[in-house]
Image (tube, rainbow, N blue to C red; front, side, top):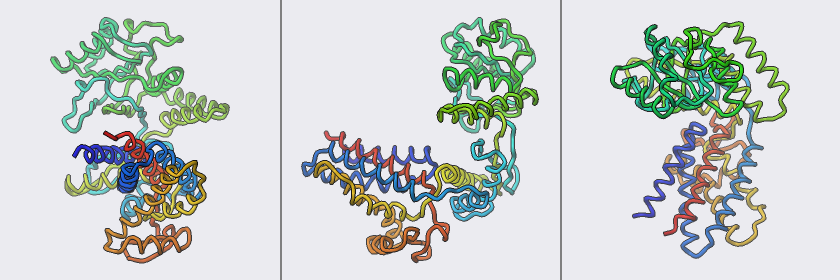
Amino acid sequence: DKFQNIGAKLVQNVANNTNEEAGDGTTTATVLARAIAKEGFEKISKGANPIEIRRGVMMAVEAVKEKLKNMSKPVTTPEEIAQVATISANGDTAIGKLIADAMKKVGRDGVITVKDGKTLNDELEIIEGMKFDRGYISPYFINSSKGAKVEFQDALVLFSEKKISNVQTIIPALELANQQRKALVIVAEDVDGEALSTLVVNRLKIGLQVAAVKAPGFGDNRKSTLSDMAIATGGVVFGDDANLIKVEDVQSSDFGQVGEVIITKDDTLFLKGKGKKADIDRRAEQIRDQIQETTSEYEKEKLQERLARLASGVAVLHVGGSSEVEVNEKKDRVNDALNATRAAVEEGIVPGGGSALLRCIPMLEELKTANADQATGVDIIKKALKMPCMTIARNAGIDGSVVVAKVEDLGPEFGYDALNNEYVNMIEKGIIDPTKVVRTALTDASGVASLLTTAEA
């Protein structure tokens, strides 16, 4: 039926989004979304005003997020990080240690990726590389049989701050790359028009090793990121104010050089850039000084991102195993654990097993609402907050409402350990959730409330 279909679609979107944001908590988000949707539909069909209900829901959600923030315990020491990572990897201490080591090596803001290992063991490799969140401009550049990505070994990089539309602009660069038998990656404000179609046709017809990527960021931030990349790879940026040479007049020495390039639809990774160490260090120092000087939080965040790219490198976790199935299963576990650990380092942890949400119910009693329908919205959230804990109990074959009542009576860090069917101090027992995961799950689930109120046919 049409409604159920809309509902199912919404809930699917919620789950996907939570996974992208915080790396886990999809089950929590789905359970919450279902509870909010079910109650919301019932009340609206009985004549409540959807817009006021939504206001109530949003009011309650904001209050709960505030409470979660206050409950949150920071995760800072390597031991704590390893503990969280181990828990997130279903108790696998080896994975926990691997992730904690990686974070120690590249810093909490460094880039960590997960790859297939070549051996039976898991290994940590630190690569000096740069990753940024722009993928290939056209999927026709894909050259890898494993997954939709572009992979080159030992490539030249052409950086341009301007848009490239005219094919004449890039022919000299293509010829130079061709003479050296090297792949060419073009990073520019944009590549379109006949320049793009020529690249694509040559890639498809004669297998030209080429790919184009939009430069990350915009405005001044893009300028600086491009010149960071040029410094890291030993190239120059065309079209900026300092460098007045035209792209047409490119020389071999103007290209950046990288040992390995991986481009997916969402991001680009340059590994083993051939920039001079002295230049890179000087640049990193400049950025550090700017971080000290700036007062704007946004600026600071952007600068730290640039610093991580330049200085701290990329950690690669090679996941080993005896068969492809085993490696893939383990890779998923490592990815989940990594995302959850990042989230925990960012915003701290709260007691797991749905108990953190239960602790937020009492303060919803005190919310001042403007009318009865808003109060109904708050009640919908009050009910929904019990669902994750109930669901866990039910899945363990126990009466959910009994468990919820019992947990509500216990101290703030206590909850229900479904595995051993007992009530314990969740933090001590290591049954925890990253605050960000719980917060994102709730935010995404409550978004459904606003959609459901508009899905009246």
